[in-house]
Image 1 (cartoon, rainbow, N blue to C red):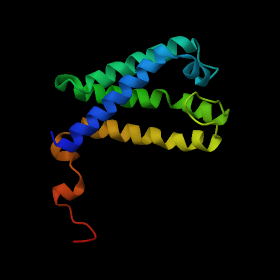
Image 2 (cartoon, rainbow, N blue to C red):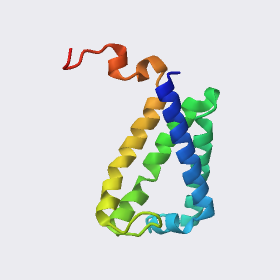
Image 3 (cartoon, rainbow, N blue to C red):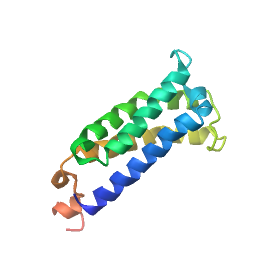
Length: 140
């Protein structure tokens, strides 16, 4: 595995374990952003926290890291309605400044997380940046 991918795998792993742990340590802010039409918001927060921790740990275990990345991709998509709900209803989330622009600007970051997870599912030779593969660039 190339070093760049290795370090980014660790960053995502730690981020997921920390975020998942927060779902258990301080669930109230997460419960507030669960859309009203979904039942059992506290249970959903705990379930998503569990899978964030599981996915984060799984990223660091080679035999299951690809499955963990796919699981995190599914999770990033599954929690997107909560992020939309937060933006639409201007729901203040502890730790994020009360600024509706930030809530809306946060939405595209889910696509970054999905792409990051997807990149981690690829074999190293496919995941190399274009310059490392010798793909022609404008400078060539």
